[in-house]
Image 1 (cartoon, rainbow, N blue to C red):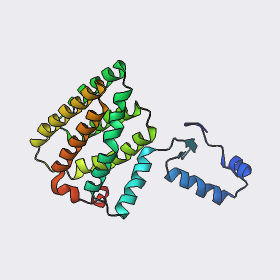
Image 2: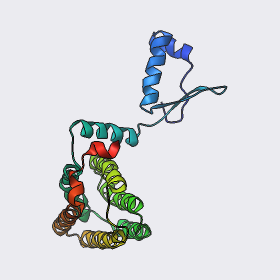
Image 3: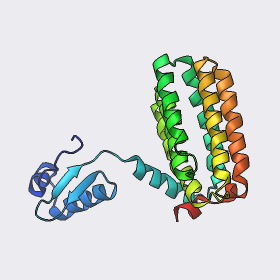
Length: 219
């Protein structure tokens, strides 16, 4: 069924699937809990189909990390393995139009300097778009899952003094511009190496927060 489509009435679903009303309602309850169906109650009651949500997947991913007592440092190291080659791949296929679009988005990222969660989200979205442009859908989704955890870190554990955030974010912006320049020049190897060095510097700035367990962030 398409997103936004109405779920058939209970009596019809019971007939189609040959199940009892309690079984059907339990199935709908599970679908609602997974945010695959929105149940409207009251006079205009009924169910509406929803697309699978990345937010739900990220939450489940977070629960797994909690159970394993994973630290933010560990999550960041996973990011350091995934991002550099994924981003550098764009250097092999980027078009002038794509490069112009990315540079325009980087200018928008600049507007969020001074607001750690907002800046982090905007910068992550820029990098995700870069990977999407290469057609690497699976890596894009993996980056989004890691982004959810990293952004919670930025919000809940990032304890740099307020006056330090703008400086760090301006350095980050400069590094993103360098990445785009290398990609625009078609130098995939240099782009990958540059971003690996950038993430190593980010990990350095995590300091003691790198030892923070994911459970502390999600709770």
